[in-house]
Image (cartoon, rainbow, N blue to C red; front, side, top):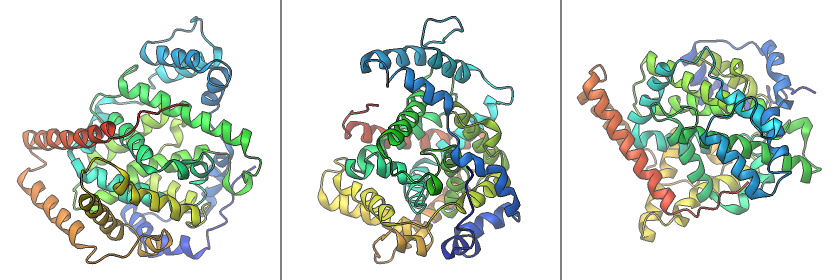
Length: 401
């Protein structure tokens, strides 16, 4: 079974790529995408992380939870050997993850990590108000969230999980085997597999023809392209200057993270041209945002009102307003309307001030100066860790497969 570019001529696809943020991506990449190349990627819509699925079948779906969790925890923290006494599928998974590929350049990945850190709270605004919120407009991509009950659980914990993952994997030298970030990637990979297997087991009305396999390989590539290509596009909108080396580093960083998450390395883009082409082709499989998309968007906006990080209600309402301003500044108006993002007064004022502040800051802290660049990295890292710490303190610790 293969995916079909069924929305290639749909108005929402055309508007995005001919008038909206997609046009900006195409212009920046300076490419014309050949739809004949769709056939290269279409089988990925029905392919999944087999190693991850097999490991879950032999652990969380077979053993008592505490035994399965202890095994995963043990081999996440210490290297596993080929003759280790352990479930065979789990062993294969960890042996694959422990094998550092020849193409991986840790120094280049660290360039990407330092860029992520030096963007400070700008990065968190883009992740939330552009990458995550914009992703809700891809109706089929979000079906696993709907079928696993995320709509009912609320956005506070999901936002914490996403923030915790992103901050941990984008620190300098973070991706060592058995590091904290590595352990988090293991849990995330197995969580994807567990969710996929449970969806397949419990939901007989899953639409394989339109939605592909739950959490399929092509959706995974598109999701993590959001952390590279779309992430950098959003930062540019906020006035962040990105050097060629930084851009290359961000793509390399996420290629390796994708590899650890079970995505074949040759599918992860290495530059804006490859990323834009793949993203363009993938979006032809995606229906426009639907009722579920609007519910997810509302849950994300209402997270500001539910979170207890800010003490007073007026503070929470003001923060919600600021995020809505960023949505209207960053996303296409058509997408905001489809997601039912409320209209607010002077929506461009706050994001414009951020942009001006970033331009000024980068002039003062000249990016060509290694010492001043390091200051930006240190300050940005501190900002991001503070936000993460707030979320960790104010979110229930209820992680469970």
